[in-house]
Image 1 (spheres, rainbow, N blue to C red):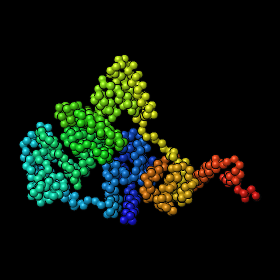
Image 2: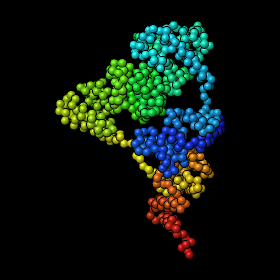
Image 3: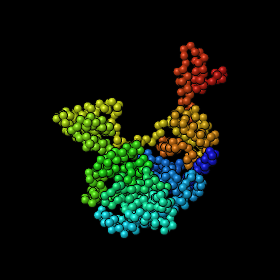
Image 4: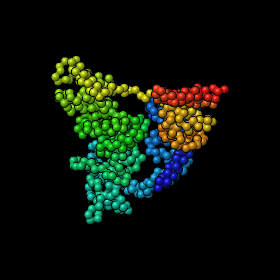
Length: 596
């Protein structure tokens, strides 16, 4: 079994290398980025952040790209995954089709039988058509939707439907169409009773079809008309629908998300529809359940930042706090826009218009501000609890400006210190006390990654040798050094040599670097990408390479001598003699030369 697995892995590596060889990354990236040739590489404005000056580089030699400002980097597969929001499996298929490479059948492991999934999707589509037709026959449902300003055009756009009150209407319809009701039960459409018959799971509800980000119909949400509990019933876990991995509206929102790299997260189906009607077409919802980690990952595939737009009631505030935790854990920048109590996007759109919805989102606050305002609302500035907790929160400020804003505002609200100046001083002392207790300092939030075109983790001579290894004409000249990493002195270089040896064994790789770089671990690929774009190591010749090897050997021997010297003890004549012999050899003087 292990041998079979290894064989499949080798086949996949070969196929990926072949795809890299055939695809021109410059041509692929040029479809989205205007590139300009700079030497043998290309540069342009980075598509992954608001780039003002060209910081995005593409190397045809390595088949990789890197932005020196935001840090985004990768190869053709990463590019397709990031720009088209695909998982690796789908990106690999996409690239294989472009390159004309036929993938091995088992490259992605066991999959759900395609015909089985198609049958399931067909049943879901039959149910949708049934619900859509039933809506037209239900005056009460149509009146309810029209009262919510959901016109027939909007109903058609969002494929809204109605599940009749009769308990077996859908089951009878599906049976007439020749659909297996047992499969429909697996899809949360029907349920078998004790007599062996089937009845409907959804009854007397407005139906919201749920599609995955690709557009496949995978589930339904049903809202009761008028009062009653539960207000919503959503599809349970089925072969098609995994609620923690699906976001309502994602199939419609993903294009806007990818274009603006921004998402808006709301609570329910009608909230999504209202936002889209207001022009906020990057809005999605978590299908009536609490936000899950996989849903955060899904949003992160399409966007770089998110605004949480939740109701201002207790449940909404609590849900927003939980969402902030998940986004923070995922290192996903978020802001929070809490609606006034009693409002949701739907009612706000109806009473104040589209601009009001967009304005609430535009005024979203940071999680830090949200936490402080939440404490103010829940505890009140007149309570001792507030003044016990607020210094702890304020101490978490990531900039002095952020801290000062709240210090000045809150000092005048102190219930026992009437003098605002005295209250400000007291509050600042408490905040500083908490900061010292944590041993933390204020961090700058606006500073981005440091841009440095020099690789500082290796010696310059080491960089030259690795650059030479990357180029066919010089590879054999440095292979001996790379095969004997004792000549290297930095930890990065030593680890890189080990990585190269583990990948290629005793024989150096052949051909252009793009043919084999993908076999190295990602960290090693990234090093070579950085080296390729390093303006300090460009043109090489044999003399320069030989001088670099000699320099490394000198540094290595010097360090060895220093180590020997530090270990010598007084009166140890043998150690002293060995030390001086090594010193003479290091300086190029041996016993033969002395006897002559």
